[in-house]
Length: 444
Picture (cartoon, rainbow, N blue to C red):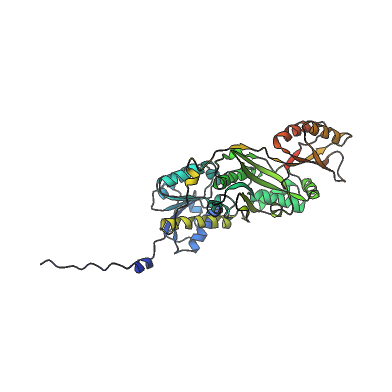
């Protein structure tokens, strides 16, 4: 007779639950300031749900660190990472290329992606969300706006029950540091910039920060996540902070205000009013109280009213926290312990609108002139403003300045941006004007 063999007893549901789950395998591409901080967190919390298996970077031999476990593979070959059995790829090299191709290749291979790449998400977010959805994986980008401030997760989950119509924020820590230093020390712009560069808050070429490119990419992402609108960053007007002078803070103080770089987007029907640039804001307002390199995001909703999110918007550790939080969410989803984020509202035709973009806000305005003093200046400026149907609210002129280069300020009652700028162009051509007029919206 054939030998009877006994089958092993089936494990109970309780014993199955007690079996340790294997950690989710993670590859890190980019070992700069943020990548290093992410690796630190993952290595110091070893044995959890995440296991760092690969670190990929150019000149990788120079990047190796003794605190990284010996079983982590160091490589400069991106393709070897994409061909491996990693489940999540972290992209932290930034920019559009080659980062965009790396992210697409990872998603095509069915690997989920976590990124802090604001330029990539601002320009290709809906497309990448659609690709991830079609391949049964995820792309998370909570660190792409406001660093360690969890504003994107809040917009995509905590506030998704509201109907948001407005988002405004201080989204660039470099600009906020420079402007708050000029305010507090009354130092020249150039000195504040040099200080920011020495402290590592600003790059040697800080144009993306100073001229608004960084902030408008972040605003485009906020508009996608919060307002469900697809906006090309280049369609948002960006104004530089380079023209702001210490004297502007003296005059702003006369108005009970200060100056900050503000990114704002208001959705009205089929038009998204959007703008990035320096604005005059009340000193006692949430924006006026934000100092140094902090970020602040305010949202306005139809049902929930106004919400505020404040915190460190840059730096290795705060941004790394946001990256690892996204990693943990994806790992939980892969392990079956949680659901994927619902991306349908971002990628379906019905969920995303493509509005008309306008910078034609209606606000009060701050106009600062530098002139060669002579009789009739105010009368001439008032005549031009009246011709363009613009009403003066106040005129400010502090004593003690050289008459050969005299700064003074005119504030205007609320008017549309489109009506103001032809008048500003005309005033800048006058023979007594020494510099172009600095024109800042006043936000109340």
